[in-house]
Length: 403
Image (cartoon, rainbow, N blue to C red; front, side, top):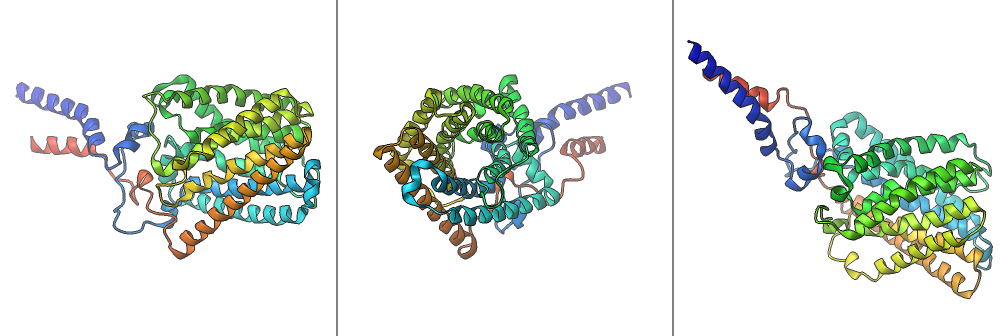
């Protein structure tokens, strides 16, 4: 009898040690996602919905949809800059374009935010999985960046003064997200920077520079310097890590190649932020601008970054960087006004507007005509209901019942 009890106890202990391993091996999540998602080791994994039918819309609506807001909102800033910059007076651009784009950007941001709030309410598990995804987590900065862009691009006819409390309200969630992301970079583990760094990580950096630009515009000089310092320190580390292309880095899928253009964004915004803090476009601002301009040219001549993959929401990653570069160029032309800088400002602004128009039209066609803009989100796929019992418990019950 004693030997039977000991045998039963040993089988139960053996089952407890094997169950987590079985659970990981039987997960239906794809291997590339499983290797990157550290949260999957903490809780039981959920199986993906069948792929042979279209999932509910909210489950197919990714957080990367806020990339549309970044593209449109930054375009409103571009046209405001074209209308108000001293070096661009010869174009005679009206602020009406800025006004129309700003209200359209405000409407788009509201609609996308509302849809994603509904996703949080009805499919929180899918949102949680996006939050722990090595690429998707960076897009959680996008809603707040979009709001910062709306504030920077607000037409003078709407308001000319903004209360400083608005800066604190928008930067607080960005700061909280940075505590998580940067803390993981420092602490290491599964989410160390050498493993999870990818071009979309720039979204976790650029918020500091945009915040510094807005803070300096509001007269919050100390807060602006703080944001700029935090952004510069972590951008330096990220830039070096990405250029090294360490063997531990996860390769970026071909359909996400447009996010390589995010390399241009941090130095573009940083040069304007520092110029606003200092009061003029000094040597440090020029240094950051020339880095951004070189990266812009370096990426544009890479033809493979524009072909070989079908249209998706990732294409909106072209629009935001292609808009940041001309805005920075206009700022530079205000300091060094000549035919070359004015011509470059007009050329880059034209490229930005054409790119946004092309991507926007493609989005409308794929969204409302072809209906393939939001395919089943396999990497973040979940079941409609959480399993009532874990596999570990089921495995233990099967052993005990067999005795």
